[in-house]
Image (cartoon, rainbow over all chains, first blue to last red; front, side, top):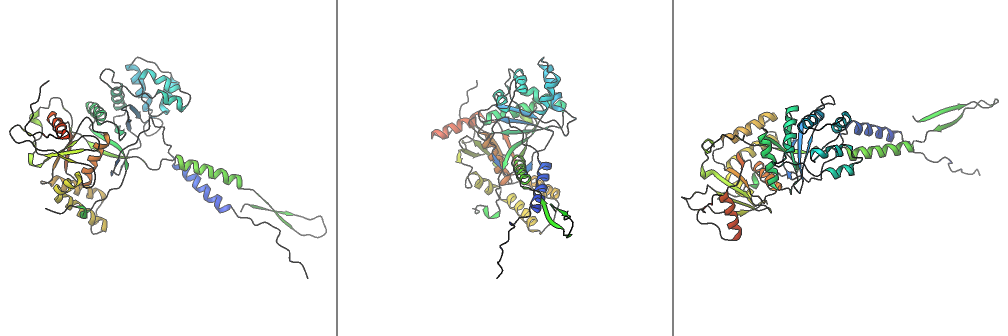
Amino acid sequence: MPKIKPPVSTPRIDMTPMVDLFSLLLIFFVLTASFRPQEAAMIDSPASISEKQAPDFNLMTIFIDKEGKVFFNVDNGMDSTTKFREQILQKMAERYEMTFTPDEYDLFGRLSGFGMPLKDLKGWIHAENSEKREEFQVGMPFDSADNQLGYWILYSRIVNPRAEVAIKGDADASYMTVKEIMDMLQINKINKFNLVTTFVTEEIGLEDLPPEN
Amino acid sequence: MAQIETKDSGKGGKKRAKKHSSEIDMTPMVDLMCLLITFFMLTTAFAKPKVMVITMPEKDKDQTIKDQPKISAERTLNILLAGNDEVFYYKGQPTPEKPMPQLVKSDFSKDGIRKLLLNWNRDLFTKITEYRDKRLTGEIIVADSTFNNTIKEMKLDDKKGPIVLIKADSAAKYRDIVNIIDEMAITNIASYAIVDIGQVEVMMIDATKAGTPLIKYPVIKVK
């Protein structure tokens, strides 16, 4: 009787389709990725039913955190040639008689939201890592004594007249702070605000109407 | 696909192709790809932030009280935001000549301020919701812009719904103002505005909170 030989070869899984799929997914994610910019502060926006999306560029964002600290961010425009941030910083530097090196302008152009008096901006630009950078975020002065936020808004409007304004406030921020900011924006002839919210669904229909009395 | 077949010619004699494949071990590549995909998936901001657009009337320093639009007192609904999720409302306008309107306490729940708004705005709400439902069920087919314009016109034509004045107290949170604007959107209120709170209204809130609502128009101390 001949012996029945068990198969020697170990079963192999053909991984080719999996690799194909993974490559496709990887390419998709690489191409669609738009990185979450580092936020100036932890902000928990209130919820609303609004479905309108925030514009991608031509947008200045004013962040208001829980304690009423204010941060400012403005984008660079549609592509890398516009360099709005650098132009805005140039105007600010002129206004406050400061000088920045070309390197600093370049770095500032690539960074995102900030909130500190202009004199501390250099430290923020040169900070080694994000934790160090965080320490500089003490909030932008915007009272009548030193209204730096007002100038940032003004120069952003001059450099990029198409910029819209988004207000990203924390749900627990005081309305008074938000109102102060809105008033300041209205002084700068900005009457349309985009309030950043998180989306929730709330559908009500005719059946929700209370009975007629 | 990933196998390379190599043909080994034997050492003379029998010419038998020795089929032995040299396979490429793809495991490290797969590992790396998994990691990269996970990384990109987690860092991609898929859900772009949503925004709620509000447009405020232009502020003009030369504007006098006379230029402000007149609104009928019967249609006016004042909503006072007092913080801590507390909402007060009253109808009309407080004047020294008339008896003081009384504040009613409400909240942001389903049976709170929304019930009042829906009740008052019944006609417009029904009209818009019916129109929207018809579009959803496919009874009428219109483009987005036409749809929005029709709703806009319906709101402009509205003559019965309330004119809501939203006034926020200094204790109000940003959340409250977003919530109340949201309620306006949910209940399809045609006209609403965010205005500054008056001194009388602050007094009304304080008095109502203290349990002794104002009966007479208060004397306002001029600072």
